[in-house]
Length: 214
Image (cartoon, rainbow, N blue to C red; front, side):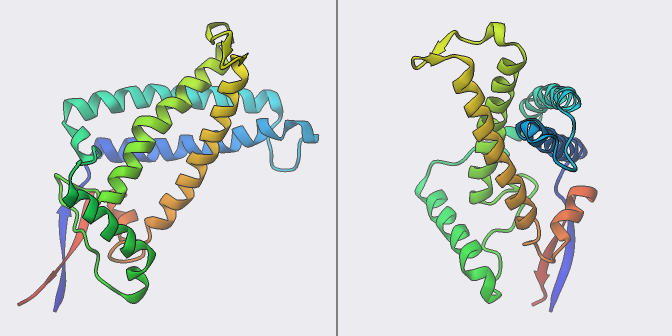
């Protein structure tokens, strides 16, 4: 017989950063879309250009400040190890197994191949993805955004092109990538023990671990 055991998994400061980040991401997506489509005579539901610019800049600076403190906390609390991929054949095999679970096995009712623990919350696929987003995608997004806000500090030329244009293109592509990540992240959050168990964990901090009586 299966029984659910609650294990404290996610510290409060991580949950606060997670939900603040989510709100800022949505704000940046909305204001960014308003800026991108500003030439279309302000389509319905989008912000005016001047308002969108202020909202986008404010949300971007707030994201940068929160990210700085997040990195400091991950170093101080040794949270870094939760994200860093482990370069080994065992990790690679576990990564392939996890990808197979999400792509095939989950639709057959197979059990999750990885059971999270407080010292290792993320499965191998999550580690790779979150590491790329948190330590590469977000910093690049912040840096290219700051270059847009302060063009006087941007390089004059990059790869033979005007310095701001390549940075603007990279910022736009990163925005698309992180938007797709957010959608996939929400979808993957439904793949816990129940449809809402992972969502509840990000509010309460407790993971519902399934144990079987012998």
